Image (cartoon, rainbow, N blue to C red; front, side):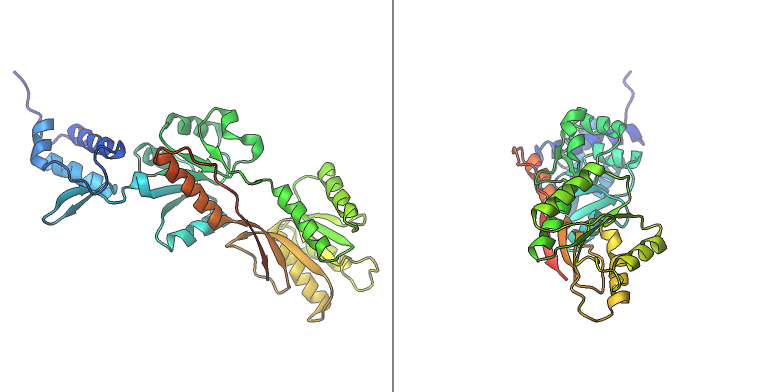
Length: 344
């Protein structure tokens, strides 16, 4: 004798949720399209009305359905697999700041500070059109993302960690995501403004003799120089050490003090600006400063600065454009790093 499935049945409820979601994600039930009446689901799955109601409640909470009086239950006009995005970004990072800007103009973006099982479940449940990664994820996550064949993935991957080389399907940004290229552009910016003696301030991360040699060669070719000891590497965790070195460098008694400074990491800019104001006050010193930076999160300093860097809002928008075109079955161009220049 057949056993009736009617009554409380979480397994059947979840089966209905999965069935509806698959129909929507596949496009068989398009946005704003009406669903069959709930009695149809009762018959198809041999369940009671409250089981269907429970399934509908879950998938409405997930954003796939909307119920309107006299119109019945319809597919949401902007279901999450077409309109919501996940972004993996460190708290307080320029990428997180860009997300907040885009949220302010109505984009549905959720920031994840960590890659965890909850995010993995939501990605597998088609809760996002795609994911934007602030950096290359660990190997175990690459495998998980690779298994989600329909999920567009993009992010700020260095060229040495191109996703295709790690066996997972995604797209990196094009447009020269090589921070060194931008740093060298800062040096060129200073030379174009007429400086002849340049100091370079870089974040301490292990000395790179080849990179230092490249920068010095670039300066010499442009008719400028970086005297011995002016290629400086500092840690923001040692502010007093940084300040003392800069005081000596820009002291009026120093006949070789620089007339230009390339700040190769924006975290060092506040230290420099504070020392310049301390040494020169409100006087025109002739010291030109060019700094790397991320818009919209530029450091506020009390010294004229020429910023050159990455516009994270426009860069993220192009990443979302890539995701959208993937979802539409197109063969999109890789997303682009969008640079900017700004005088403050």
